[in-house]
Image (cartoon, rainbow, N blue to C red; front, side, top):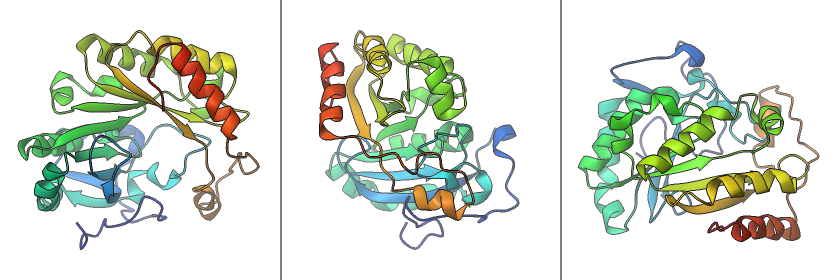
Amino acid sequence: MADEPWAHSRYDLQQARSPDAPETATFDDPRGDFGWIHSYETGSTLDGPGIRVVVFMSGCLLRCLYCHNPDTWHLKDGTRVSFERAKTALAAYAAPLRAMDGGLTISGGEPLVQTHFTKRLFAAAKAMGLHTALDTSGFLGTRADDEYLRQVDLVLLDIKSWDPETYRRVVGQDIKPTLQFAERLAAIGKPVWVRFVLVPGLTDAPANVEGIARFVAPMRNVEWVEVLPFHQMGAFKWKAMGLNYQLSDTPMPSPDLVARVLGQFREAGCRAR
C-alpha cells in the first residue's frame, strides 16, 4: 500500500481529494465496486489483536465535539479506490499479518457509511486467513446485516456516553441505535471491545460512566472496555477546515480521573484498561 494514492497517516489532513464524490448522508452503492478511503496505517497494535493494517474510510454522520479527524466526515475528502485495487494492496500484507496473529481493522469516519465496499473487503481479508475487526459507533448498525457480521471477528464499539442529552451534545445524534446494536451483538455472541472516550467536563460525570458500565457488564461477549483519554491531536484540523472547535481549552484527563473511571468499570464487573 505504500505506493498507493491513499497512503497517508490518519493524522494527515485530507481535503477535496474527490470533489465529485456522492453526498455522505444519502450514499448507497449496492455493488461496492469503489470506496472512498481517507488513509491507512500498518503495524497498529491498538486496533484489535496482533499487528494490524487499519483502513480509515471516509464518511460519517456523527459530529463528535472531540473528533480528531473531521476530514473523514465527507466522502469528497477521501481518495476514490476500486475494490480490486484495495484487495490487491491488502494481499501484499497478508502473510506477515498472519504470522503476527494480526489482521485487518476498518475504521473511519464510519465504515458502515460504505457498507458494501467494507463488507467485500472484510470478506476478502477472511479469504486470506486474516482476523477482521470493525471499528464503529454503532449508529448505523442496522446496515450491518447478518452476512456482514459473519465477515467480522471483532467489533470495536464506541459508546460515547450513556446519558441521552450528553450523547446528543457530544455527537449530535441519538444514542438509541448504538445501544440497540450493542444488544444485537450480545445476542449473537459477537466479540466486542467497548471504547469510551473520557473527556473532562463532558463525558466524565460518575453517573454517565456508571450507566455505560452497568449496561455493558452483563454482556458476556464484551471482552474489554477501553478508556481512551481525550487529547488535542486533531485540533489543528478543525482550525485548518474553519470549524468551530469547542474543546480548545479542555485538558487531558488527569491520572486520578482515568483511575476513577477505570475503577467504576471494574467495580461493575467489566474488564477495563
